[in-house]
Length: 102
Image (cartoon, rainbow, N blue to C red; front, side, top):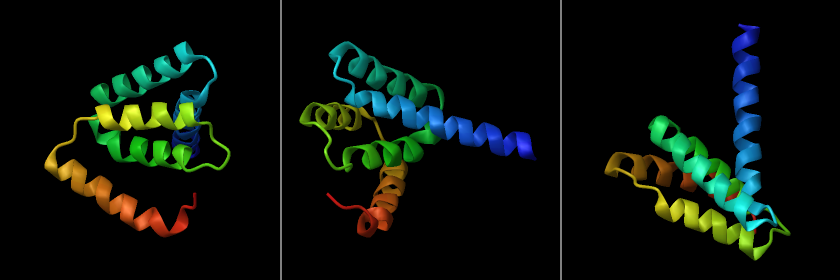
């Protein structure tokens, strides 16, 4: 059971790290991070809600540069969602909305 918990925590840290690279000063690195996130969602479509939540958390950080927000918006805009997925993401967004601050 401990191995499973460690793997899940490491996956969360890895996802957070890739999403954080959307804010890299190098355009090439930020663009590659968006590509990797898109590739991740093509391989594992069930992770869309988790990835959207992480990108949202990233975009609402204080002191974030406009270019970083731009790459976050571009990534979210390029996601293809089914009706069911869009409802799930909307519910997750509404649930977390009171906790986020700009």
